[in-house]
Structure formats: structure tokens, C-alpha cells
Image (cartoon, rainbow, N blue to C red; front, side, top):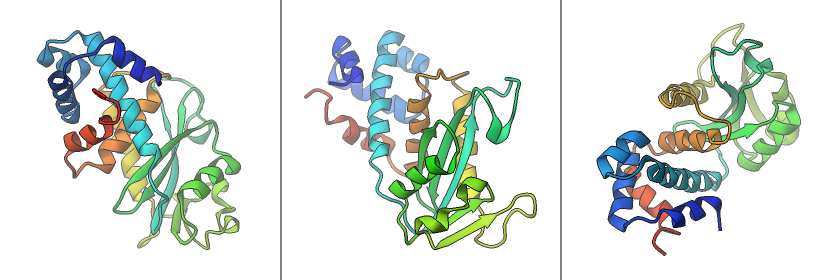
Length: 225
């Protein structure tokens, strides 16, 4: 039994009330707005939102291997007001590695560092070897061809911003979307960052779908069983 499910048991609500929470979550309302509209205690709403986000994260982790034209990149999440290094040497920030299938979905994973062996483990597990891989010129991507990815193209930002298909605009677009969206929470704790990141991933991947219907399917496995 997961911790999220234990939280659910301690604050059980009606089926109709839970579906109302799901509908408001699909509309991307805050916990405070949801509590007001559902006449529920904010702590109760937050417990259910934590449960929903946990199930979303599990759902996202099961994404099938990526193939076709795939972009790889890393990004750093954290307060802009913190002093210190920026970019790949930044301290006290969440390091996130991303995989984006062009005109498709994105997958994200929090990593401890951006060393080649760290990124290679994720790449081999999520990207099929027949893919066409696009990256920037970061040294950790130097050995991608030796892993078995024969079609690897690189963009060096200091020289140009890419020509034709050689770019990583898709994954960079996702980074921008996620960072703008997370601003509304006015700071996300280290303990909940993973869940909020996966929620961004989920909303981005299914932005053209009925989120409420997908959420019903995701939560059906344990809700009211």
C-alpha cells in the first residue's frame, strides 16, 4: 500500500466529490480554488491532489520507448534569486533530463548529475536504437554513437541556432512551459518537485486530449475499490 493511498483512506470522500476534485484538477485550478468550490478542507483537497499526482507520475513512468526523431537535453529548476553558479554547474537546483519525440510526447527524469554514464542509462532505457537523436554540443553526449545510436546530430549554440531539422526546439519548448507553469505555486518543495514535474509532463503530453477522462482511467485502479 502506497503512502498516497494511506492518505486517501484517512480522508475518504464520496465518489461524486472526488470526481468534482478531478474535474477541477483537469482545469488546473489551485488547491485553494478547489477547496472553495467543493466546500472541502484545503488539507483534505491537498491529500487527494497528492494522490492524483502520484498516480500520474506512475502513469508517466510507464511510457513506451521513444523512436523516430528524438531530442535530448537537460535543464535546471530552482529559484532565480539564488546566488552562485548558473547553467550546468548550478548548485542547489533540481537537474532534470528530458527526452522529446518530435510532434509527440516528452519524458523527464530527475538526475543527480549530468555525467555521461548517468544520461546514457536513461537514454538506453527510453530511446530505441534506430532513432534519429538530436542534442546540443554538451560533452556528455559525445559517446552516443558508441552506444549504438548511429544517427546523432548536434547543434552548437555558440555557432548557430540550428539549420533545418538539426535543433532541439521541442524539448526547450517544454522546459519553458514547465518553468512558467511551476511559477504559480510560488515555490515547490524538494519533496514535491518530482510530482509537480510529472504533472507538467502529463499535461504537456495530453494537452490535446480530455484530461478528465484520462484521469478517471488513471485513478480507477484504487479509487473506491
